[in-house]
Length: 150
Ligand code: ZN
Image (cartoon, rainbow, N blue to C red; front, side):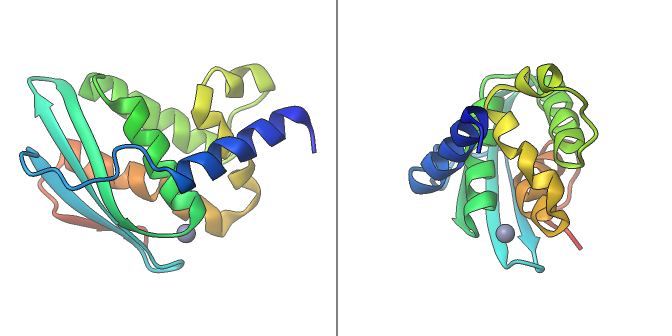
């Protein structure tokens, strides 16, 4: 295992053990439930949007280490960004876990999100890693109350 892979592994372990923004949000402007029946991951994502800025984001629920760590990293990364920036990150993340990003430079540019690059080799895990992002996307862009990866 390379040093970089070890670092990525560390990010996932850390965020799974001590997830950031893992709480219910009482004054959320939107809450959407996300479910990945393939693995049993089930999270509720809360967002508080003011104008076009995401002032707060949190989540609660349960799932495997990948899905939980991904939700945690996502919440930390999109907080205080604009909705457009968050959607752009979602696009980048999607390309990352689909294995569409080429070259270490392009991957490392994503910061902590890069920790999920290895997921692209495990198709079933892609759904775990993307669940929180799909849920966030639904919260930001539609009136849906729940999403499923199926
Ligand atoms: Zn999972």
